[in-house]
Length: 293
Image (cartoon, rainbow, N blue to C red; front, side, top):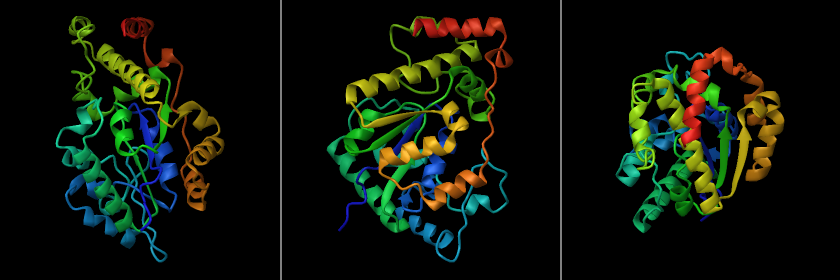
Protein backbone atom coordinates (compact mmCIF):
# COMPACT_ATOMS: atom_id res chain seq x y z
CA UNK A 1 0.00 0.00 0.00
CA UNK A 2 1.32 3.44 -0.98
CA UNK A 3 2.60 5.62 1.87
CA UNK A 4 0.50 8.80 1.66
CA UNK A 5 2.61 10.58 4.29
CA UNK A 6 5.73 10.97 2.14
CA UNK A 7 6.99 14.58 2.10
CA UNK A 8 3.98 16.26 3.70
CA UNK A 9 3.74 20.01 3.08
CA UNK A 10 3.62 22.13 6.24
CA UNK A 11 3.05 25.89 6.29
CA UNK A 12 4.22 27.87 9.32
CA UNK A 13 4.23 31.54 10.23
CA UNK A 14 3.11 34.25 12.64
CA UNK A 15 -0.67 34.85 12.61
CA UNK A 16 -1.75 37.61 10.20
CA UNK A 17 1.43 37.23 8.13
CA UNK A 18 -0.22 35.97 4.94
CA UNK A 19 -0.14 32.25 5.69
CA UNK A 20 -3.81 31.71 4.84
CA UNK A 21 -3.87 33.04 1.28
CA UNK A 22 -0.53 31.42 0.40
CA UNK A 23 -1.36 28.05 1.98
CA UNK A 24 -4.84 27.93 0.46
CA UNK A 25 -3.40 28.61 -2.99
CA UNK A 26 -1.24 25.49 -2.69
CA UNK A 27 -3.96 23.48 -0.93
CA UNK A 28 -6.21 24.00 -3.93
CA UNK A 29 -4.10 21.38 -5.73
CA UNK A 30 -6.48 18.45 -6.11
CA UNK A 31 -3.93 15.82 -5.04
CA UNK A 32 -3.62 17.20 -1.49
CA UNK A 33 -5.54 16.25 1.63
CA UNK A 34 -5.73 18.51 4.67
CA UNK A 35 -7.39 18.86 8.10
CA UNK A 36 -10.75 20.57 7.73
CA UNK A 37 -13.48 22.39 9.61
CA UNK A 38 -14.89 18.92 10.34
CA UNK A 39 -11.57 17.90 11.93
CA UNK A 40 -11.93 21.03 14.06
CA UNK A 41 -15.49 20.28 15.21
CA UNK A 42 -15.30 16.48 15.42
CA UNK A 43 -11.60 15.61 15.89
CA UNK A 44 -12.27 12.04 17.04
CA UNK A 45 -14.24 11.19 13.91
CA UNK A 46 -11.53 10.87 11.26
CA UNK A 47 -14.10 8.97 9.19
CA UNK A 48 -15.85 12.28 8.45
CA UNK A 49 -13.05 13.11 6.02
CA UNK A 50 -14.95 11.03 3.48
CA UNK A 51 -17.33 14.02 3.23
CA UNK A 52 -14.81 15.77 1.01
CA UNK A 53 -15.66 13.26 -1.71
CA UNK A 54 -19.27 14.48 -1.67
CA UNK A 55 -18.38 18.18 -1.80
CA UNK A 56 -15.61 17.85 -4.38
CA UNK A 57 -15.79 15.29 -7.17
CA UNK A 58 -16.17 15.16 -10.96
CA UNK A 59 -19.82 16.20 -10.71
CA UNK A 60 -19.74 18.71 -7.85
CA UNK A 61 -17.09 21.22 -6.85
CA UNK A 62 -18.13 23.05 -3.68
CA UNK A 63 -15.23 24.74 -1.93
CA UNK A 64 -15.73 26.37 1.44
CA UNK A 65 -14.07 29.73 1.97
CA UNK A 66 -12.62 31.52 4.98
CA UNK A 67 -14.40 34.74 5.85
CA UNK A 68 -11.08 36.55 6.33
CA UNK A 69 -10.42 36.16 2.59
CA UNK A 70 -13.84 36.13 0.98
CA UNK A 71 -17.48 37.07 1.33
CA UNK A 72 -19.20 33.84 2.31
CA UNK A 73 -22.72 32.51 1.92
CA UNK A 74 -25.02 31.10 4.59
CA UNK A 75 -24.14 27.49 3.66
CA UNK A 76 -20.40 28.09 3.79
CA UNK A 77 -20.05 26.71 7.31
CA UNK A 78 -21.20 23.28 6.09
CA UNK A 79 -18.83 23.12 3.13
CA UNK A 80 -15.57 21.18 3.43
CA UNK A 81 -12.65 23.61 3.84
CA UNK A 82 -9.09 23.60 5.13
CA UNK A 83 -8.60 24.47 8.78
CA UNK A 84 -5.77 24.60 11.31
CA UNK A 85 -7.96 22.34 13.47
CA UNK A 86 -6.32 22.88 16.85
CA UNK A 87 -8.91 20.73 18.67
CA UNK A 88 -7.73 17.89 16.43
CA UNK A 89 -4.13 18.45 17.53
CA UNK A 90 -5.21 18.71 21.19
CA UNK A 91 -6.97 15.37 20.81
CA UNK A 92 -3.94 13.75 19.18
CA UNK A 93 -1.33 14.83 21.72
CA UNK A 94 -3.44 15.32 24.85
CA UNK A 95 -2.42 18.91 25.52
CA UNK A 96 -3.22 22.41 24.29
CA UNK A 97 -1.29 22.44 21.03
CA UNK A 98 -2.62 25.85 19.95
CA UNK A 99 -1.13 27.65 22.96
CA UNK A 100 2.09 25.66 23.24
CA UNK A 101 5.58 26.11 21.84
CA UNK A 102 6.07 22.29 21.97
CA UNK A 103 9.87 22.48 21.94
CA UNK A 104 10.34 18.72 22.03
CA UNK A 105 10.18 15.67 19.84
CA UNK A 106 7.06 13.54 19.73
CA UNK A 107 7.03 10.38 21.80
CA UNK A 108 6.96 7.05 19.96
CA UNK A 109 3.31 6.63 20.94
CA UNK A 110 2.49 10.09 19.57
CA UNK A 111 4.36 9.42 16.33
CA UNK A 112 2.46 6.21 15.66
CA UNK A 113 -0.98 7.57 16.57
CA UNK A 114 -0.54 10.84 14.66
CA UNK A 115 0.78 9.14 11.53
CA UNK A 116 -2.04 6.59 11.69
CA UNK A 117 -4.62 9.40 12.05
CA UNK A 118 -3.26 11.46 9.15
CA UNK A 119 -2.82 8.40 6.93
CA UNK A 120 -6.50 7.66 7.45
CA UNK A 121 -7.40 11.32 6.82
CA UNK A 122 -5.61 11.35 3.45
CA UNK A 123 -7.08 8.04 2.31
CA UNK A 124 -10.64 8.89 3.31
CA UNK A 125 -10.42 12.13 1.35
CA UNK A 126 -9.25 10.08 -1.62
CA UNK A 127 -6.06 12.08 -2.05
CA UNK A 128 -2.36 11.32 -2.48
CA UNK A 129 -0.46 13.58 -0.10
CA UNK A 130 -0.86 15.48 3.18
CA UNK A 131 -0.59 19.24 3.61
CA UNK A 132 -1.55 21.55 6.45
CA UNK A 133 -0.95 24.94 8.06
CA UNK A 134 -0.28 25.98 11.63
CA UNK A 135 0.45 29.46 12.97
CA UNK A 136 2.16 30.82 16.06
CA UNK A 137 5.16 28.83 17.32
CA UNK A 138 6.67 26.86 14.45
CA UNK A 139 6.85 23.58 16.41
CA UNK A 140 9.34 22.34 13.80
CA UNK A 141 11.16 20.02 16.20
CA UNK A 142 7.93 18.27 17.14
CA UNK A 143 6.55 18.05 13.60
CA UNK A 144 9.85 16.97 12.06
CA UNK A 145 10.11 14.09 14.52
CA UNK A 146 6.77 12.82 13.20
CA UNK A 147 7.35 13.69 9.53
CA UNK A 148 11.16 13.59 9.02
CA UNK A 149 10.91 14.28 5.28
CA UNK A 150 8.43 17.17 5.61
CA UNK A 151 8.61 20.18 3.31
CA UNK A 152 8.25 23.27 5.51
CA UNK A 153 7.18 26.61 4.03
CA UNK A 154 7.74 29.56 6.32
CA UNK A 155 5.68 32.64 5.41
CA UNK A 156 7.12 35.96 6.58
CA UNK A 157 5.62 39.44 6.57
CA UNK A 158 7.02 42.79 7.69
CA UNK A 159 6.64 43.16 11.45
CA UNK A 160 4.77 46.48 11.65
CA UNK A 161 1.81 45.48 9.42
CA UNK A 162 1.71 42.09 11.15
CA UNK A 163 1.49 43.74 14.57
CA UNK A 164 -1.18 46.16 13.35
CA UNK A 165 -3.24 43.39 11.73
CA UNK A 166 -3.14 41.27 14.88
CA UNK A 167 -4.35 44.17 16.98
CA UNK A 168 -7.40 44.55 14.76
CA UNK A 169 -8.83 41.02 14.93
CA UNK A 170 -11.26 39.96 17.63
CA UNK A 171 -9.46 36.87 18.93
CA UNK A 172 -6.38 38.98 19.59
CA UNK A 173 -8.20 41.97 21.07
CA UNK A 174 -9.76 39.63 23.62
CA UNK A 175 -6.66 37.53 24.29
CA UNK A 176 -3.11 38.01 23.13
CA UNK A 177 -3.23 41.80 23.22
CA UNK A 178 -3.75 41.68 26.98
CA UNK A 179 -1.70 38.64 27.99
CA UNK A 180 1.00 36.41 26.55
CA UNK A 181 -1.02 34.14 24.24
CA UNK A 182 1.42 31.23 23.85
CA UNK A 183 2.94 29.31 26.73
CA UNK A 184 6.72 29.31 26.66
CA UNK A 185 7.31 32.76 25.13
CA UNK A 186 8.59 34.25 28.39
CA UNK A 187 11.84 33.09 29.97
CA UNK A 188 13.54 34.16 33.19
CA UNK A 189 15.67 36.67 31.26
CA UNK A 190 12.63 38.59 30.02
CA UNK A 191 10.08 38.01 32.79
CA UNK A 192 10.70 41.30 34.61
CA UNK A 193 10.57 43.29 31.38
CA UNK A 194 7.33 41.62 30.33
CA UNK A 195 5.78 42.55 33.67
CA UNK A 196 6.76 46.13 32.89
CA UNK A 197 4.75 46.20 29.65
CA UNK A 198 1.72 44.10 30.71
CA UNK A 199 -0.60 47.12 30.45
CA UNK A 200 0.46 47.96 26.89
CA UNK A 201 -1.40 46.01 24.17
CA UNK A 202 0.96 47.36 21.54
CA UNK A 203 4.12 46.28 23.31
CA UNK A 204 2.74 42.87 24.32
CA UNK A 205 1.77 42.23 20.71
CA UNK A 206 5.13 43.40 19.39
CA UNK A 207 6.97 41.20 21.88
CA UNK A 208 5.07 38.11 20.81
CA UNK A 209 5.58 38.74 17.08
CA UNK A 210 9.32 39.25 17.50
CA UNK A 211 9.66 36.35 19.93
CA UNK A 212 7.85 33.93 17.62
CA UNK A 213 10.18 34.83 14.78
CA UNK A 214 13.24 34.45 17.02
CA UNK A 215 12.15 31.00 18.21
CA UNK A 216 11.43 29.90 14.65
CA UNK A 217 14.91 30.89 13.49
CA UNK A 218 16.42 28.95 16.39
CA UNK A 219 14.40 25.85 15.52
CA UNK A 220 15.39 26.05 11.87
CA UNK A 221 19.05 26.23 12.85
CA UNK A 222 18.89 23.38 15.35
CA UNK A 223 16.72 21.00 13.32
CA UNK A 224 18.26 21.77 9.91
CA UNK A 225 14.73 21.36 8.57
CA UNK A 226 13.99 21.11 4.87
CA UNK A 227 12.47 24.57 4.59
CA UNK A 228 11.81 27.38 2.15
CA UNK A 229 11.01 30.94 3.20
CA UNK A 230 8.52 33.13 1.40
CA UNK A 231 8.03 36.85 1.89
CA UNK A 232 4.38 37.90 1.82
CA UNK A 233 5.39 41.16 0.11
CA UNK A 234 7.10 39.24 -2.71
CA UNK A 235 4.01 37.09 -3.10
CA UNK A 236 1.82 40.18 -3.51
CA UNK A 237 4.15 41.54 -6.19
CA UNK A 238 4.64 38.33 -8.15
CA UNK A 239 2.27 35.59 -6.96
CA UNK A 240 2.72 33.20 -9.89
CA UNK A 241 6.50 33.16 -9.52
CA UNK A 242 6.41 32.66 -5.74
CA UNK A 243 3.82 29.89 -5.92
CA UNK A 244 5.83 28.15 -8.64
CA UNK A 245 8.87 28.36 -6.37
CA UNK A 246 6.92 26.56 -3.63
CA UNK A 247 5.69 23.94 -6.10
CA UNK A 248 9.22 23.20 -7.30
CA UNK A 249 10.47 22.95 -3.71
CA UNK A 250 7.68 20.53 -2.78
CA UNK A 251 7.80 18.54 -6.02
CA UNK A 252 4.21 19.57 -6.66
CA UNK A 253 2.73 20.41 -10.04
CA UNK A 254 1.60 23.98 -10.79
CA UNK A 255 -1.87 22.57 -11.34
CA UNK A 256 -4.96 23.91 -13.08
CA UNK A 257 -6.60 24.29 -9.65
CA UNK A 258 -3.75 26.48 -8.39
CA UNK A 259 -3.88 28.66 -11.50
CA UNK A 260 -7.65 28.97 -11.12
CA UNK A 261 -7.33 29.91 -7.44
CA UNK A 262 -4.87 32.71 -8.25
CA UNK A 263 -7.16 33.99 -11.01
CA UNK A 264 -10.34 33.89 -8.92
CA UNK A 265 -8.83 35.41 -5.77
CA UNK A 266 -7.29 38.77 -6.70
CA UNK A 267 -4.74 39.96 -4.16
CA UNK A 268 -5.09 43.14 -2.16
CA UNK A 269 -1.94 44.75 -0.78
CA UNK A 270 -2.92 45.97 2.69
CA UNK A 271 0.63 46.91 3.64
CA UNK A 272 1.23 50.62 4.22
CA UNK A 273 4.03 52.82 5.46
CA UNK A 274 4.88 52.21 9.12
CA UNK A 275 3.77 55.73 10.07
CA UNK A 276 0.30 55.00 8.66
CA UNK A 277 -0.11 52.27 11.25
CA UNK A 278 1.41 53.87 14.32
CA UNK A 279 2.65 57.21 15.58
CA UNK A 280 6.37 57.89 15.94
CA UNK A 281 6.03 57.39 19.70
CA UNK A 282 4.41 53.98 19.20
CA UNK A 283 7.03 52.98 16.63
CA UNK A 284 9.71 53.86 19.16
CA UNK A 285 7.99 51.63 21.74
CA UNK A 286 8.01 48.78 19.24
CA UNK A 287 11.67 49.39 18.46
CA UNK A 288 12.48 49.22 22.20
CA UNK A 289 10.72 45.84 22.44
CA UNK A 290 12.77 44.43 19.57
CA UNK A 291 15.95 45.60 21.26
CA UNK A 292 15.49 43.52 24.43
CA UNK A 293 14.57 40.22 22.77
